[in-house]
Length: 203
Image (tube, rainbow, N blue to C red; front, side, top):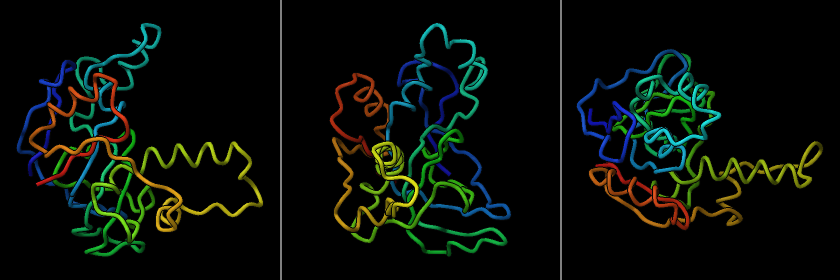
């Protein structure tokens, strides 16, 4: 499968196209055909290794001493379930899903295996893949602050999917780039002027 790989810390040009082995879902995992992903600040910081000096050593230990430990970046995705491992109950082939890959990264590829118990959900019925891919991280942050504002124990908190379908939560898309323009997208986000999410559409 095609993937964008970061084999060294550096500028956006450190990202290269590679053919890598297509993953196979293990027990409790689903294989997602990625249709869209995003370029987040997390991706920029890992690729460029821009961290405060006081966090240099802990960050290197966590992310990789000489290069990113997870060379395929990308922490958000939306796509279609292509196959499922044994014992998977929540999802089936053909389901449209959106997910956060978080510390595992890996969304800058045509396929990604995810634990069905992880931060993954069926896509809102009123969104396309591009908008859905921009939801996981920002929406989780919004939910965190909603809870801090008083929506806590004893309150009914709608899930992200329900909020979007009800028109109460919306993904803001600044720009959309094709997969083969990932370097350009990283340059744009790295400038720090984006006004919303920068999405990447997959072939």
